[in-house]
Image (cartoon, rainbow, N blue to C red):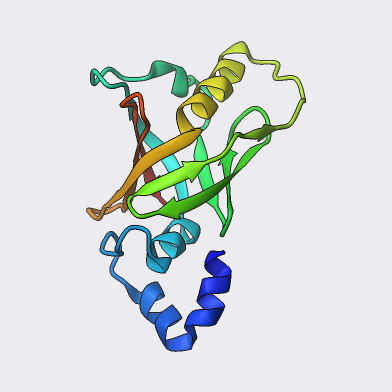
Length: 153
């Protein structure tokens, strides 16, 4: 959908969206979608509604989870299994459908548990905003109040 909007917008509007300063794109706009697509997002912080660290999302000796976006999908990188879901940006929200997860076994129990935890926290409607201080950060907050912070690479 965002790619279609980009084509319809024309070169000057598309370039303006691409040139928007990091963190300054109005949420829900084409620029927000392009900001999501432009970066690989690495999980750097995860806290529950009480401010407690969600330790299950950080596994020793495992690379941090990553989110990759395209115009209609979000995928979780560095997970034990391949996972992706349809997504769309609406105003200050990110709507994430049910994840499709490859049925392969995960030999490391902590990584298997991490897969379950990230999917549980990312599905549904999440509040979305960017924090522009370098590095650019994507902040997602789910209905339970879990706050996931991803640094843009």
